[in-house]
Image (cartoon, rainbow, N blue to C red; front, side, top):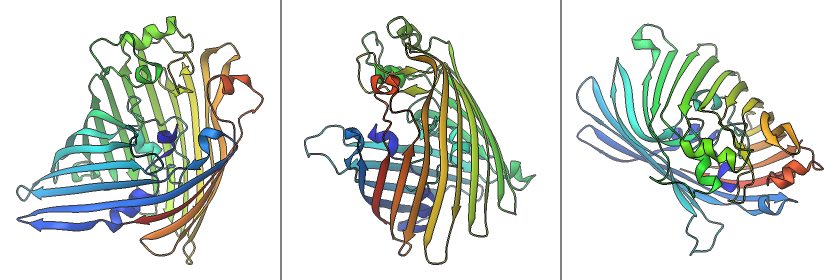
Length: 375
């Protein structure tokens, strides 16, 4: 659960601004970026209360091959600081990929990267701590950060239409092992068969952008057969999703909205191997955020995030909200390197619904307070 709450959010833009060049020689350069987030959650839910601090470090580099070709790569690592030193799962690689870019024909890279569906999700994933989680999940097909993806991107449509961008992505099969008959629920949820996806976006000079993306993947044999042991695991052959969104970013105002639908893809409540949680047959997801940047450095935001699922085959009902909350946040930037924030997630899920407690889904409000140093 804690890993799912850590998102790149609006700090991706800050990283790009504050990256430090640590090497430049023979047309090759390497930049270092990162942040420390001293973060505390306050909640009645035990799993969502306490220290959530972490450190993030990344390297981004490129080298000039000739006047038209450039090689590039990126690596980003996350380390939790709220655990004892002998904990084995307190650090992981978020991003790691390398590729080639042509000034006209576009860029292609392979490795651990953002799934193509995040091209739209990134419009609304702009809150200091929460947000961006209606259906985006790490290592679940091509919704969020994932591995084994080959990505092609072209900006300005081969130089023909300024602002029109396309993306194509292929993901190879990832089934965790050659024999996964005894895989736990979390491991099964993060398998995937071969998949393909694409995105199309347009950025206007007025600050308005629109985007759409879709992805289709095979599901593994083990994922489909898990329905026989836990009926809340969807049994469909294909995992599908599509998304569309719009944003406005000008005159100190940031507004964005996203709508997405998934089939046999979205996981919920999977926290152990005791047949809890599942994979929804269908979901409808919406995210909306409104933000304003004051001269003083204060940036308030008001957001709404929801995921409504159908065909979940639960004994407590076949249709449920999996995620539903209003988010109120305020960030204050002391300067370009240090900021502090308060992010209040007002949970709208029914606290009396046994479905949520049986599936390990929190219904409690959460207040996140953080002090961030980024470089």
